[in-house]
Image 1 (spheres, rainbow, N blue to C red):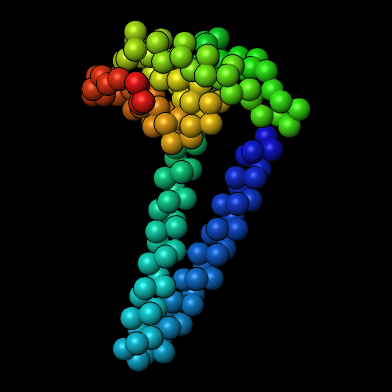
Image 2: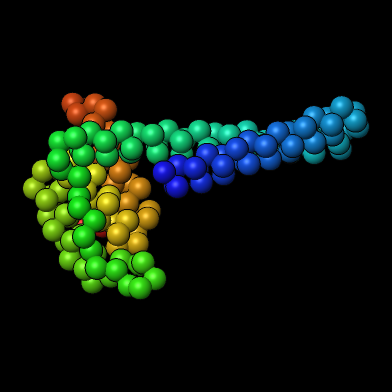
Length: 157
Protein backbone atom coordinates (compact mmCIF):
# COMPACT_ATOMS: atom_id res chain seq x y z
CA UNK A 1 0.00 0.00 0.00
CA UNK A 2 2.90 2.34 0.77
CA UNK A 3 4.25 1.98 -2.77
CA UNK A 4 0.83 2.82 -4.21
CA UNK A 5 0.55 5.97 -2.10
CA UNK A 6 4.07 7.01 -3.08
CA UNK A 7 3.24 6.48 -6.75
CA UNK A 8 0.03 8.50 -6.51
CA UNK A 9 1.74 11.37 -4.68
CA UNK A 10 4.62 11.40 -7.18
CA UNK A 11 2.19 11.35 -10.12
CA UNK A 12 0.20 14.22 -8.60
CA UNK A 13 3.36 16.29 -8.11
CA UNK A 14 4.37 15.58 -11.71
CA UNK A 15 0.96 16.61 -13.04
CA UNK A 16 1.19 19.84 -11.05
CA UNK A 17 4.67 20.44 -12.46
CA UNK A 18 3.42 19.74 -15.99
CA UNK A 19 0.65 22.28 -15.46
CA UNK A 20 3.11 24.93 -14.25
CA UNK A 21 5.52 24.34 -17.12
CA UNK A 22 2.66 24.31 -19.62
CA UNK A 23 1.28 27.58 -18.32
CA UNK A 24 4.73 29.17 -18.69
CA UNK A 25 4.86 27.92 -22.27
CA UNK A 26 1.47 29.44 -23.01
CA UNK A 27 2.59 32.74 -21.44
CA UNK A 28 5.66 32.77 -23.67
CA UNK A 29 3.56 32.11 -26.76
CA UNK A 30 1.11 34.87 -25.79
CA UNK A 31 3.98 37.33 -25.52
CA UNK A 32 4.01 37.21 -29.32
CA UNK A 33 7.60 37.73 -30.41
CA UNK A 34 9.18 35.08 -32.64
CA UNK A 35 11.74 34.16 -29.99
CA UNK A 36 9.19 33.79 -27.17
CA UNK A 37 6.85 31.82 -29.41
CA UNK A 38 9.69 29.43 -30.28
CA UNK A 39 10.61 29.07 -26.59
CA UNK A 40 6.95 28.65 -25.65
CA UNK A 41 6.49 25.80 -28.11
CA UNK A 42 9.71 24.18 -26.90
CA UNK A 43 8.57 24.49 -23.28
CA UNK A 44 5.16 22.96 -24.13
CA UNK A 45 6.86 19.87 -25.54
CA UNK A 46 8.26 18.94 -22.11
CA UNK A 47 4.88 18.44 -20.38
CA UNK A 48 3.55 16.51 -23.37
CA UNK A 49 6.47 14.09 -23.18
CA UNK A 50 6.09 13.89 -19.39
CA UNK A 51 2.36 13.13 -19.56
CA UNK A 52 2.98 10.43 -22.16
CA UNK A 53 5.73 8.88 -20.03
CA UNK A 54 3.57 8.98 -16.89
CA UNK A 55 0.63 7.42 -18.76
CA UNK A 56 2.75 4.58 -20.18
CA UNK A 57 4.25 3.82 -16.77
CA UNK A 58 0.84 3.87 -15.11
CA UNK A 59 -0.49 1.42 -17.70
CA UNK A 60 2.52 -0.83 -17.16
CA UNK A 61 2.08 -0.85 -13.38
CA UNK A 62 -1.67 -1.53 -13.62
CA UNK A 63 -1.15 -4.44 -16.02
CA UNK A 64 1.68 -5.91 -13.96
CA UNK A 65 -0.46 -5.67 -10.82
CA UNK A 66 -3.34 -7.39 -12.62
CA UNK A 67 -1.01 -10.25 -13.57
CA UNK A 68 0.24 -10.47 -9.98
CA UNK A 69 -3.34 -10.68 -8.69
CA UNK A 70 -4.22 -13.39 -11.21
CA UNK A 71 -1.09 -15.37 -10.43
CA UNK A 72 -1.73 -14.99 -6.70
CA UNK A 73 -5.29 -16.31 -7.16
CA UNK A 74 -3.82 -19.34 -8.95
CA UNK A 75 -1.31 -19.86 -6.14
CA UNK A 76 1.65 -19.33 -8.48
CA UNK A 77 3.02 -16.06 -7.15
CA UNK A 78 6.70 -16.42 -6.20
CA UNK A 79 7.27 -16.53 -2.45
CA UNK A 80 9.57 -13.84 -1.10
CA UNK A 81 11.74 -16.02 1.13
CA UNK A 82 15.18 -14.86 0.02
CA UNK A 83 17.67 -14.04 2.77
CA UNK A 84 18.19 -10.35 3.37
CA UNK A 85 20.97 -8.19 4.76
CA UNK A 86 20.22 -6.13 7.87
CA UNK A 87 19.58 -3.18 5.53
CA UNK A 88 16.77 -5.16 3.87
CA UNK A 89 18.56 -5.80 0.58
CA UNK A 90 18.20 -9.27 -0.88
CA UNK A 91 21.32 -11.45 -0.77
CA UNK A 92 22.77 -11.33 -4.26
CA UNK A 93 23.95 -14.97 -4.37
CA UNK A 94 20.54 -16.27 -3.31
CA UNK A 95 18.83 -14.04 -5.90
CA UNK A 96 21.18 -15.32 -8.61
CA UNK A 97 20.37 -18.93 -7.71
CA UNK A 98 16.63 -18.27 -7.95
CA UNK A 99 17.19 -16.36 -11.19
CA UNK A 100 18.93 -19.38 -12.76
CA UNK A 101 15.97 -21.59 -11.87
CA UNK A 102 13.45 -19.04 -13.22
CA UNK A 103 15.40 -18.63 -16.46
CA UNK A 104 15.35 -22.40 -17.01
CA UNK A 105 11.59 -22.50 -16.35
CA UNK A 106 11.09 -19.73 -18.92
CA UNK A 107 13.25 -21.51 -21.48
CA UNK A 108 11.13 -24.65 -20.98
CA UNK A 109 7.83 -22.74 -21.41
CA UNK A 110 8.58 -19.57 -23.42
CA UNK A 111 4.91 -18.96 -24.29
CA UNK A 112 3.64 -19.00 -20.70
CA UNK A 113 3.17 -15.52 -19.24
CA UNK A 114 3.47 -16.98 -15.73
CA UNK A 115 7.10 -18.02 -16.25
CA UNK A 116 7.93 -14.61 -17.69
CA UNK A 117 6.30 -12.94 -14.69
CA UNK A 118 8.35 -15.02 -12.26
CA UNK A 119 11.47 -14.33 -14.33
CA UNK A 120 10.77 -10.59 -14.07
CA UNK A 121 10.55 -10.92 -10.28
CA UNK A 122 13.84 -12.83 -10.27
CA UNK A 123 15.50 -10.14 -12.38
CA UNK A 124 14.23 -7.48 -9.97
CA UNK A 125 15.50 -9.45 -6.98
CA UNK A 126 18.89 -9.69 -8.71
CA UNK A 127 18.79 -5.87 -9.14
CA UNK A 128 18.56 -5.96 -12.94
CA UNK A 129 15.68 -3.55 -13.42
CA UNK A 130 15.92 -3.06 -17.22
CA UNK A 131 15.69 -6.81 -17.86
CA UNK A 132 13.00 -7.16 -15.21
CA UNK A 133 10.92 -4.57 -17.06
CA UNK A 134 11.45 -6.30 -20.42
CA UNK A 135 10.47 -9.67 -18.96
CA UNK A 136 7.35 -8.14 -17.39
CA UNK A 137 6.45 -6.49 -20.71
CA UNK A 138 6.78 -9.91 -22.33
CA UNK A 139 4.51 -11.44 -19.68
CA UNK A 140 1.93 -8.71 -20.27
CA UNK A 141 2.09 -9.20 -24.05
CA UNK A 142 1.65 -12.97 -23.71
CA UNK A 143 -1.24 -12.52 -21.28
CA UNK A 144 -3.06 -9.99 -23.47
CA UNK A 145 -2.83 -11.93 -26.72
CA UNK A 146 -1.24 -15.35 -26.39
CA UNK A 147 -1.75 -16.13 -30.10
CA UNK A 148 -0.08 -12.92 -31.36
CA UNK A 149 3.02 -12.95 -29.18
CA UNK A 150 5.96 -14.62 -30.87
CA UNK A 151 8.09 -16.96 -28.75
CA UNK A 152 11.49 -15.68 -27.72
CA UNK A 153 14.26 -16.53 -25.33
CA UNK A 154 14.61 -14.84 -21.94
CA UNK A 155 16.56 -11.57 -21.97
CA UNK A 156 20.21 -12.12 -21.20
CA UNK A 157 20.05 -15.84 -21.98
